[in-house]
Length: 364
Image (cartoon, rainbow, N blue to C red; front, top):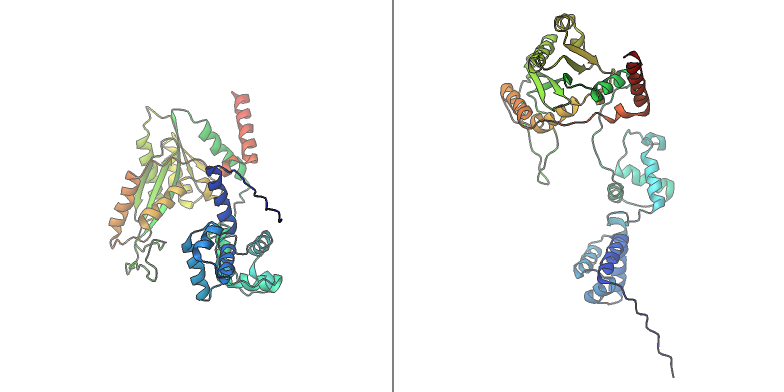
């Protein structure tokens, strides 16, 4: 008499089964699941039986079969980490991305998916398509994006300048105001940018024929988030002086004893006409940022938001209408409650701030 096989019964709560199924789907998503489906179909199993055995839907079975009939191979076209992107391959791919293509013999400055795929095959023997590499990059949270220009932040007085601005920010009295100022170029020629479009089409933004410019000088209040501004046809020290006059009027003497205006080192901020104006208006004091350090000026974020919401892909044909759009944006979408950039809170800046506080206590 043959022995009866023993039956193993595992009691798993329904909620736990749901959690385990989620882990299973993440682990086998894409190529591995499709391979199991194809092999079971080759054994003449029905789609319903396969779906029951593999804990998937019948539509997944039909999709895998259709892909195979179309000539697709799941281990080459599946998305995500399960499409053959093992930890070893992750390390190899990231190692390539850290170096320039010229290091591996390519006469180009940027990696393409095709170049990465061919380099992986040459160096590691892995035959993958450019599309698979693209999916791997997305799975690793890499995106095809524009670069941005960055200047060298190497001012020898960088630390003391940033430390003083942070100290003003943290120790501002009720009768003092701290503003960050800069200029914004407004062009009638639209800034081209991304937007949603139907696949196979591209939205056209007509050029104005002849570009016109206006210049906005703005000052952002770090305490209230409000912006004071003036617009001129030219970017001269007269524009900056007009802004200072607007700031002085917005902060009357009976409420404010001192107004600090943080600016960069652009020439109009240091013009002799500006120095003479400041000499006759002692309540205002200019505080200069380190050279080539735009990240230290929070108003840059505000201007970036203005370009994003107003000037990018605009369809205005007259410059004055575009200027009115910018003014409307500044009036309606504020206040802007920004924080200081992280560069103000590095270890060396924090130490310099503590020294300034110690010196202030000693001299008091």
